[in-house]
Image (cartoon, rainbow, N blue to C red; front, side):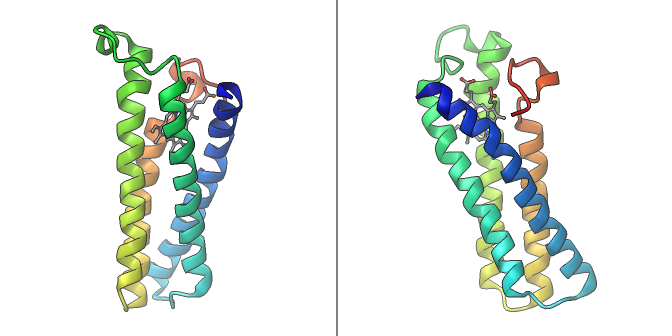
Length: 146
Ligand code: HEM
């Protein structure tokens, strides 16, 4: 179960990244171009939100089964354990909260440009945090590209 979950969580990152990026591009162009907030804008923001939440659920399960999450005395001193037990969790949770807030704040607004602006800013900051929190292969946490 662990290996399957890990592969799903690892691969899903790409879908999550593409969907968030797509929602940001649409929101940014809507904001800058003063466009209407269409059904397709709402759906792209919604799909990014849904897949980010699925990733959160997979991550939560992994958090309880992963050998890289440990609450031992020297967890803070071990880079790998500290990364997965604290840093990855905190960065991703903050990012997901921001994306969720961006979606629901945009939903409550009536002005189209203001909606685009909310999604662009909240999803934009969320994406930066996610990029910073991913254990990219070059960071030395033993994770792959997929
Ligand atoms: C959008 C959010 C997230 C992305 C893009 C993401 C991405 C990743 C990636 C790429 C890996 C490396 C997988 C590998 O070794 O090949 C990973 C590992 C991990 N993630 Fe996430 N993650 C996210 C959110 C979360 C959250 C919210 C949690 C916890 C609640 C979490 C818990 C974990 C754990 C425990 C591992 C280590 C698993 C292991 O190697 O044993 N992730 N994540």
